[in-house]
Length: 189
Image (cartoon, helix red, strand yellow):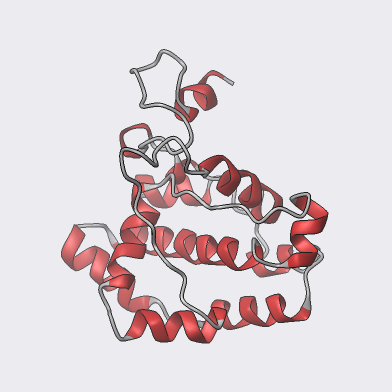
């Protein structure tokens, strides 16, 4: 099994992730959005990753599934019932700690007609990508992304935190194993 696919499935439960979400308190609107997200055909993104980026089919499918989960995170993080119960009422900003999931998102955005239509179908509005800049790298909230992911799906697979892929979002840049970045802290735990 290729490395990415193995990393994505290492802690994936045997039941579909939408079943896990059924136990989380959310309003009906959010559940409808997640139902629509689940049936979206994102196969063209698998094709793009294999053709343009050299991913194996299995790795591309794993990355696309994690992208789907990231979209679910962005939808759920806006749900007032979820925010009240799990986030203290705060609407978090979500950071992107994975080069692979971010690559899927970039590929999706390049479909300039399809991406806005996808966002409208599943979310009712655009899901904007806000790239990090030198000024914003310390204020991004990948920690919140991981926290919400853990609530919804269990522990994030290592596909999200592969050392060479990980540009810190909520800490300073990695100093190569000194324990300053989330990847180092995670490895030390």
